[in-house]
Image: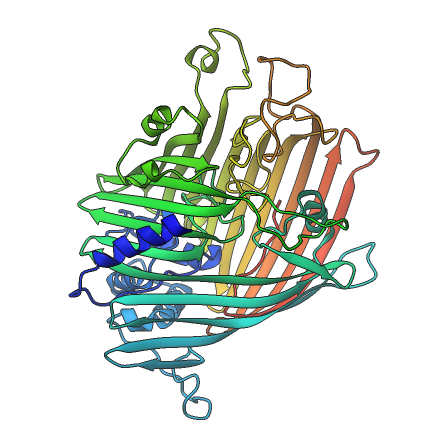
Length: 561
């Protein structure tokens, strides 16, 4: 933490006093972000305001883009006009277009704007305060009690002197999860997306969630963000590079946007492992930490193609060498004796036709030329990489507001694992990329349809094939917390295939309907079907989960794994 604090002070010294109009970052919400990105696809060319390959986005950047859309010929349907007004109202302090005032403010001072329970704004100080609520109840066969969520909290954002923006989100949560999520928690010791937890009502879990950051401009084309949050790389439903599946972590981020290039640097501190008591609960202790650095250079090539190249490193000991924002990490690692975990690769999107996009990722964990191309032997355990290929189709089949997304993901056995302690690609015992870790293949299909302006529906289906370990002392390459050199499989260097170990197949489908009653107040209905077969199961495990929820200023929680 001392090293990150030093970096914070260095960035602060370079902050320019003449820069105005700073915006906090918008929490990553797939439904919300889909609305922003769908209009880029409807127009065709890449978004001229910001690159979409690294999320989340800053509010002032989204505001500029929304103004450019206000007269776009692509905004034709009532649903699209509603969506644009919704996004503009949500970022009203950063848009030039006219936004709505509440017709009936509460006690004259509250909800004067549809998006803000309370706001105050003058030339120096700007603040927006909102309650955060997620109340849900669901039924799953085989369980007498309801599956529940009770989340309450507070969210606020704003700026000081129009130069320093801030954001904070805090909730206290009591949750009884559906069965497959509970199984995941009991196996890994971690709640997906969360940190420290306690038992709640025998079946459930209680935890406190918090995110917060400040952001400012270092110069006209360099922005900085400092805080606890998650990051996401790519255009897909999943990311094989860096995703939002794990607990928020402390990081410093620099974003340099100049000409057609966008360079993003992230330096972070993460939780390497957790100490548990005799009952398997996280206990009070000084948890071991690890350090993470990443940079991604994105480039717009022509009007419709964006290609990014990235490199990341995971360290169990901090090294000042990785603070250099433009150094090649692999070179640094060699100078240090190759003690750290380096990953590199690429991602891309191509808006090849109006309303259509191809996207993909390739993350390389280890490369040995003769083994990668099968010269010295096939299916080496050192052929470790993740792959993604996807397709988006907006207004699919010429049906307005029907959006289709198809995606394929895979990761070879032992990808993201490491031979040294506390250097796997994880945070708080959960993967930093795909929920399955490695040793899997996955196909996903998503249909989003907005039949009327206030109603969003989503049908997501997926098929997963993966290999699991028969016991804790055997490592077939799925569990990222295991040592990649200690396998006990008897296979040797070659002959490692995706799905090795105990073969599992999961078929899953979820239908969701979300009705926006007021700005950011949603009534949700969802039904989830999940069927799992495995070589060590006598019969398939099948479940159905039906859920009703009220959400206010909170991201919907979907456990699609």
